[in-house]
Figure 1 (cartoon, rainbow, N blue to C red):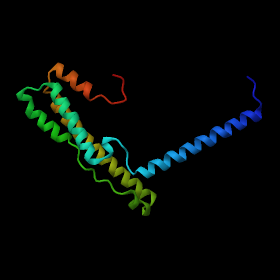
Figure 2: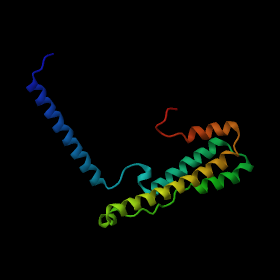
Figure 3: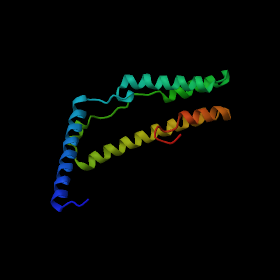
Figure 4: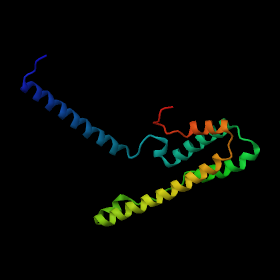
Length: 147
């Protein structure tokens, strides 16, 4: 199929205009919603989502009575907590180095939360049998990883 340079240019311009139009509409839709539909986008919904997943995991693990104490500690340490995130509107008056310091402080806080999370998982994981570890590993795989 032979296309002239003009035809190709017109097709590229139309495609580019359509792409920009879709981007603008998508941005407009996102702003109008105010929040996402995912369970974790809603603070109340995330807690319910977490409880449902943990309950399913507990059932599938078939824990012994001696493991129940470890389970309670584990699940309490992993319960979602309200993260104190400053409103980005407060940041508009900060200069760039101060905003970077704020982001760095947030990252340090998230790193500490992840360290605590990993320690709780490791402590509970050590109480599981080999079969339970396989079930646990399957339930804690990333959603985008191949299963």
